[in-house]
Image 1 (cartoon, rainbow, N blue to C red):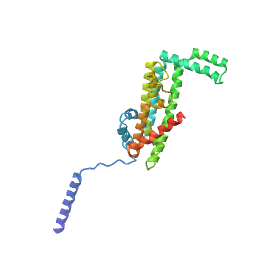
Image 2 (cartoon, one colour):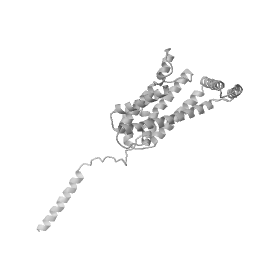
Image 3 (cartoon, rainbow, N blue to C red):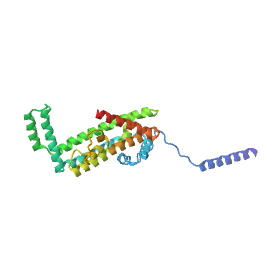
Length: 273
């Protein structure tokens, strides 16, 4: 009887333990590095949203883990935006005529530089006068824009990666740097869009969204140089990328912004020398 009672008590105790374990709350389990949280929205939307809310967007992108689409999709989007703007701009008769005149004058200036003889330059100018079409400038400018954007992505990603190695401990790869820099290309798309609108409004090809250009338009005596590098969108991108660098290394924002500003300043000095 004693043995039987003991078994019953044991079964009762085990049952109560099972009930108590089932009734315990389930605590959330943190994601491991091998199973990162999903990004949550398309990379193109990140490229748009990151200009407005860099802190929140970069915090989510860093937590999402490595995804090649983070630079591929924005790069393609910027290429499409610049191509569409080139198509619209150079199909305007006034802008096309100006681009055509500048191109032909450039060929004639090749005589002074010794690249062409006067006869060659004149024949080429006459041929181009008849054959040039908007499509030519769309292709030339579109190809140049894609090349410039690729160089921008490569150089800025390299500086971004250098900042991570210099400021923060750990093994941060260049490919991951490119993935975090890629969404910031939304600023380049915005710059291309606004510049195209200004070109269409003014029917001029030499306009830029710089302080120097604005000052000259207002009649101020500002030479081409330093002030042409002061562009609101460029300065904002320096801040956005600085925020991204800080979020990547879980550091104060001022450290990342200061490092990205240092790189921008070095680029300006090198260009002005």
